[in-house]
Structures are given as C-alpha cells and as structure tokens.
Length: 160
Image (tube, rainbow, N blue to C red; front, top):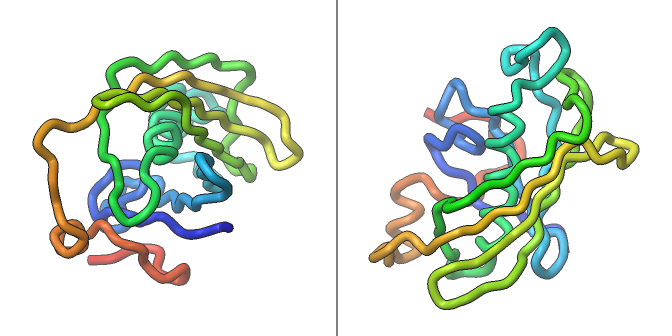
C-alpha cells in the first residue's frame, strides 16, 4: 500500500523549498499508519553525534499528525499536547525509520502515536499526541496544490 503523501514548500520537516528543512517524505504504509525513512545530518545535532531533542520532537510531531492526513480530503490539525519519551540517543548520520499511527478520532480532536527506530528496529524515541482540527480550514485540492501541498516526484529533493 505504500502511497506517497504530499510534501509542502515551506514546512520545517517536509518542505522542499525550505533550505533548512529535514525534507522528509512520508508514505501511507497501512491503514492508519505512515512511515518515513531518513538519515539526519550533523547540522541538526545537539551533542556531537546526537540529533537535537527539539528535532526529534519535531519529527515525532509530524509523523503523528500525518497519520491523520490520508485520502483525498486531508485532515489538517495542530498539536495541542505532545508527550515525548526519549528512550535512547537518536544518532546523526544513520538510517532512521519514523512511524506514525492513528489513535482515536472525534469530531474536532484526535490522538496519534509516533516513534523513531533504528534501521534494525531498536526504539529510540516515541510520542503520544493530542491533535485539534484547524478551525475554518476548508481548501480544495487545487488550492492546496497552488500552495505547494502536493506529491512531488521521488527524484525531486528541493524546489524553488
């Protein structure tokens, strides 16, 4: 089922036009689950060899929110609460796998979980997230694409 999710132009985590972005690409992996594979460069480290905790938190936040962005009518939400558990240091320069999973969904709110793993499956960090619908955000697919929210070809690593 691995279907690509849209990227944006300016998002810190997935923005392809943002020179400071992590440029992550997310995929619908299974019903209610998204994944992203990445290797974080040393530009995002805190201590030598370790990804900064704020970057780890941002990746977990994005993965959890994207678990609810599926299908032709994405549900855009903001984070009301993010509880992160740092299990081990997240290394720079090594392959990582992010996983976001849908939790309970209500009319205006939803929950999700997310985690970061090493290539061999060791849990490094995880989060529980409470999300709230962005009020009055009703946009057509065409409007979203005009803002840069769309699926870009795999070989596109940045856009102007």
